Length: 360
Ligand code: PMP
Image (cartoon, rainbow, N blue to C red; front, side, top):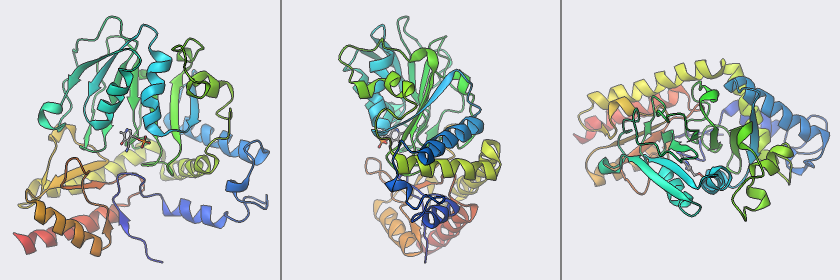
């Protein structure tokens, strides 16, 4: 067996321990004589899987009791619609547009009400996070929306915006469980799990209970109401059972690593190694304002498209996979999520140094 260092932005690298355990349990999960893939979601064995997953996530994130944890489908993109359908009681919301995903959420919300773009960093290709300390928050806004870590551009909010008392809704798809968060500062925290937590097909929504109600936009489908899923403990219909099982294993793995404080330390150490090199390199450079750099997604360029392509090709030959930047921005991007070991980043930096010497 040979494994590569996989720098994909998502679906992305998972802890080897988790993959091995899942492999060992494939034919017979815990004496049930079947795989979790083959198991009824109404069985006791699956109920234990989802209950344990939720309990471990609550412990990891220190989620207060007045928040529900929902395991849903439809990806993060489905939340772009569900959020306004469920929360826009006054028909208005404010969006801070710091990248393509925030922009898509903002555009989708326009279908359901007045979605105001109150700040953006599009003027400089989303290479920074705007000052959010005193934004023109709308009086009637039902919530303020952010994308906390911008997967494509590699920026991250280091401080949450001042929402002036309005509910904060945050897409944390690409920084989920990468560091501790204060859940009580949010109305909704959500993300697709396929970057930092598990396989594609599950989206986790952590939502304050008072935001869950039948008072939703007229015509909202049953499946797109938070209440439907909250009332049924995420088992209104068949959930993405196997995905939830893997997420549960990753939560256990995270606890074993020492929880989110320990992950933050590890992630900072990994990111520092790469950013320090980018800052001293004569060939490569980071594309993001230093103060807003993400710990998870690190974009960089040589400034020469052909050289970028050569780098991506040679890196792949050296076992460093998926370093090509997003198709809309070009260059390179190394996604260094929780499960990317320090040695993976070391290998990347060593390879970059060699490439620099050979190509300057
Ligand atoms: N938000 C962010 C920050 C993302 O990075 C992505 C996808 N990569 C999405 C939303 C969309 O996720 P999905 O494909 O699960 O709909």
